Length: 139
Image 1: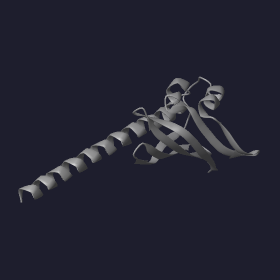
Image 2: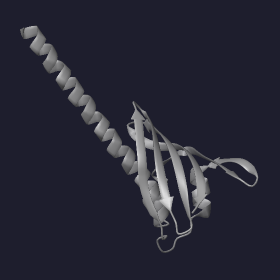
Image 3: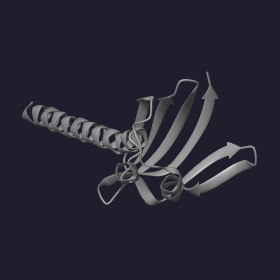
Image 4: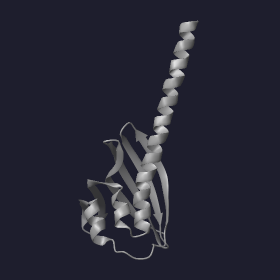
């Protein structure tokens, strides 16, 4: 009986520790993608760049077909300081297992949406976006 109670107690402690770790990872992933969302909304490259790994790729389709660029370089070149953008942002979902995660984001403008799919890795204890793929949807 004593061994059974000890086993149940150890299982409870392990599950509680796993749940706490998962919650901390979820919050850290949300913080990382919010650097991207807040930085983009406020035209603040310094904040936005904190979300990305230096080698992060951005892939998309345009009139020329499949495109892949370095995400940080793309935003550095295209982002201009100015007033905040008129848009709404939200984290649709976060799915994480171990040191890998996927976040789906939605950015709403007056006439269209961006649907962003961010792949993240926990590198040296810090979550970073390593890949961004997006789709632009007209309203």
